[in-house]
Image (cartoon, rainbow, N blue to C red):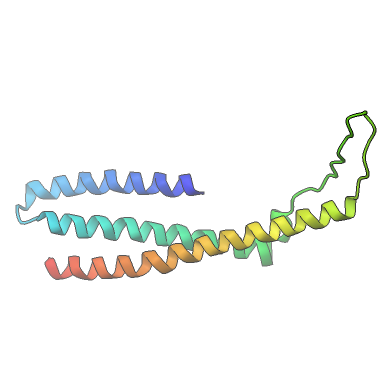
Amino acid sequence: MFLLGVLIIILSIIIFGGISAAKQKERSDMSLKKAYLYLVSVISLVIAVVGAIMLINLALKTWVFKKADMNYYSAVCPVAPDGKSANCDEAAQKKQAQENRAAQKQSDAAQAIAMIVIATPVWWGHWRLAKREA
């Protein structure tokens, strides 16, 4: 998911650079400050959208499509050095797998919320400044 966000940012920079270069030829009043404001606006907007997508994906997997996030459980019993199977507590392993899945969901939610909370004000502030410059 992170790589998808990076790819989107790189593509938006390339597209924005091409549009900016084309408009630079048309209009000579494009300042470096304006280009910076628009670039930061685009990047922060993309980050906020990726965070929202991650949060919606997590919500859908948690409440609507509950089986989409289900990991198929299989017990892995440790083997002792002498080749005999050691004590295997499948219930404890299953509980640990569920706790790990819950912890991963919380981590994903925290990352998505942080992306939205940070990127949205950055986008809004730079977009307003860019519009004032225009």
